[in-house]
Length: 407
Image 1 (cartoon, one colour):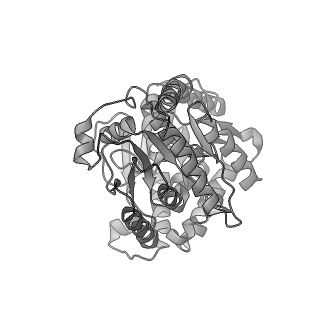
Image 2: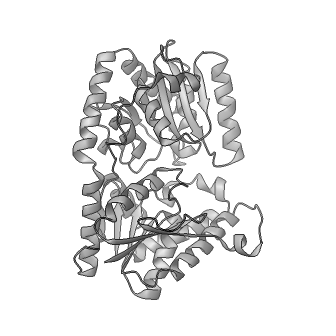
Image 3: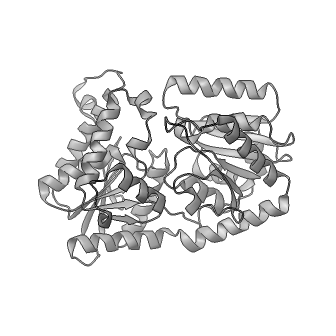
């Protein structure tokens, strides 16, 4: 069975949870099917396993250009055309995120083969993207809606995400939506001690620290965490691995918040560059508590990463997060009620105070934090292995094609 994964991100160009998902899924799927990957960006080199073909947008090929916000979406659609054109020898097309959904849909129409969509997020639930993409948000929404409504199967990365798919796209039949979770490589993500790295990054190994890892976007709720941090235990540091702002405005807003917080408490460390994975694992391993203050999160793979490193988690009780973080067992959940805009908490002060309360509860009880960490790692090992996830995915392909998975 010849399967093509269509994705924007693929190593070494990975910046978010969807890219991490595709990277690890591809490793395991390649053992089960004849797999190829079609991605965005620079040539990845020959002789890779699975085989990787990278595609460029039209203006990289003909010298056209511009920096209008909507052009990002048009460039994406041009890459999708190139991907679809290259899919003629495949038996199954499997696309990830709106960036590649149109490629899968066009390939389905052109070659009459099944198209599977994995939903890592949904455009109707990310209205802040309009600030980033301008008119391109209507294009991204079109790509996603068109692909999901016509897909032969839709994979939701959590039960909460499945509910969101059916609510956002009522034309999608429930029997076409399967839940297959994100996974974690617990051999790679495990506790790794290294105080030397902490010192090089400006973190005091003798003081506990609260850790955030994520992009600077409304979705990740970083501004709410910074507000909450004003009242964190005075002994605790705050380490923010936060970069790639959606737009200059939100980047400047977060920078101003961090500056104001730093003026009133010590130990605020902002790491704006993307760290190598092994360094991120060390940071996760040493954190007293990891915080995920997202206002929208279909699953939250970063919580799995923290749990696999035996770190207690405090996270918003939104989307698929409660399916990962077990309240009172692997960490603490923070209630969140959004306002009518679907972006902002109904009461931002209440949300920030709830984050503060739970973070301080973990910081003040080291034994409980250790218990959360141990339970979190056990949960990742038991319930989120990539081998099992790849097997479920290959079984879905077999159901659609009537073929037995195999290389």
